[in-house]
Image (cartoon, rainbow, N blue to C red; front, side):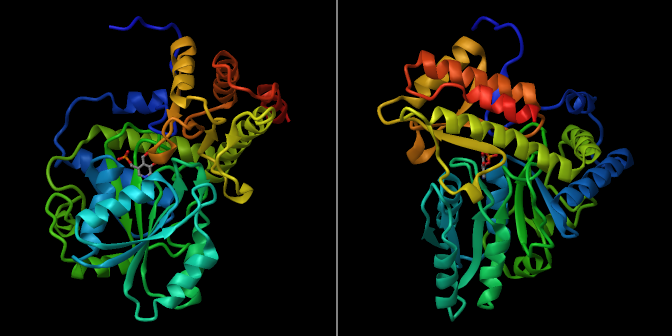
Length: 391
Ligand code: PLP
């Protein structure tokens, strides 16, 4: 067994994230009957709160799963074999969602994107306009690409669909954006949303969900892909209109507390806090970028993510060896590169239950570890972040 390091592990991964102590306490309870009135009442409070965070009046279906389960459930409940879906391919996660669709016999068309900028809106508009026969049944967008740190302008995607009167369903993965930066399902014309518990909602991994609006529910009635555990129709026959099988009760008490914390802070204030901590991180990276040092991976300043910053190391430097220094020497866990970015980038998660000293601690360790790893960089990144946060 490895020796305990004193103090807390600084968990600076872009999810799962830190769980507030009061959320941990709220979940620390004995097993109860998930069919009992007490639980049904708690469930109703939790789901109403989640709908406020999502800004939707639609249905919400929960699964005992991580985000992958919600991806799968959403595809199975909305499509039939051979259906054509369009996936803007701007990182690791859209590729994986598309690969899942292929496995289930969907015709998946990838809209190629520059991973450092995300979707090209003109290209998307042209592709949708060219689809005069409306063969494309849905567009599947990842709001915040956790592998690259690029956030997509969801309202522009809606406008591209409306601009050519395209009737495709609009599906959005909010796994690393919900509870971090602005998201408004109904107002933004999103038909189905995929979410997970372990990032902005500050809960343990294992509770994933889909929110579905009226158009998605209509599509569900015709969808023929085989499904059982994930079947929304079976779920709707149950009092909670969720889950096929036993319901994990404890996470819902955690969710009530997490949403209480979110609403006590206020969603707008919470989004502003995430923006401030993300800005401080980006300021530090821009200073480190001098002397051919590490760079912000996202090259479009209008699309930088407020929940994760992906940082590209100079050629010839090993990002995983660098992360190991931060973890072994200083007990700071940074995110690694995914897919084609493996070992080339590291990621700082600045989402969830986080404040200034926590982000400064992480940035301080990154700056020390850059030095220890012999990675060239400009000096004074942390000082720049401190000056910004003190302002
Ligand atoms: N989508 C996004 C944007 C993610 O960041 C992740 C995981 O980090 C997933 C999907 C997959 O979710 P999970 O790992 O919970 O299965």
